[in-house]
Image 1 (tube, one colour):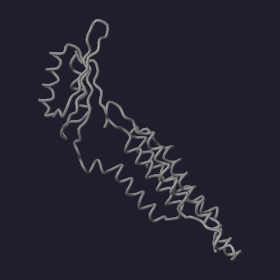
Image 2 (spheres, helix red, strand yellow):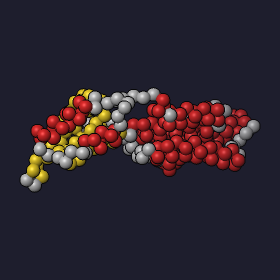
Image 3 (cartoon, one colour):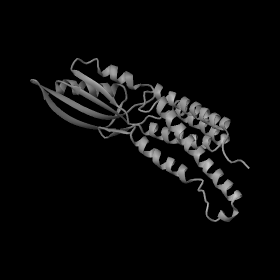
Image 4 (cartoon, helix red, strand yellow):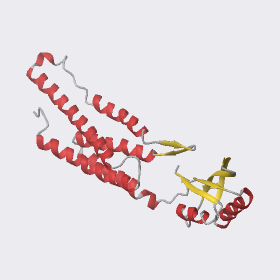
Length: 234
């Protein structure tokens, strides 16, 4: 009967956790997300370590029960207790990557990737290699390729600061109309800088596949009255 995980098994599981989380973390870092390579690796390693500790606790309980039959009703080990704490506790770390700005939410995908990386670490730590490998492949495919395969035109946020309200507002409206950009909503505010009034519009826009966010920013920046154009990720 196995009483403890071997050194080789521990090392293999730790390295596998680093590999899986590292690849996912590189993808997140490449896309300039709040949690990158090291964060994902550490989360996965931590979950893997906890899972291995949980396994050893179970092995120790079985070994004690085998050596001391009279303690069978006393010595117990819950195989899911520590793991359950990881699954629920990782939510606090994920919440730290979510940013709410101007009624927009960023970081949800990164928070979800941290949670799923912890799940991969648990699978590796428990020795469920088939689940771990299959799970990693699916997760990486979702993060890396799903967005390229399925094109969705969500409503985006665009913040524009400008001078000379009437002329510049007409330019913005004409630009949207010319490029088939649908305005779902707009929030308006005005501030005073020195002797001039600065107008700020936050547009909720919907645009098709033919136009890119960068193209919109560059196109609007051509007007000299526009001080700043800023995208707000949802």
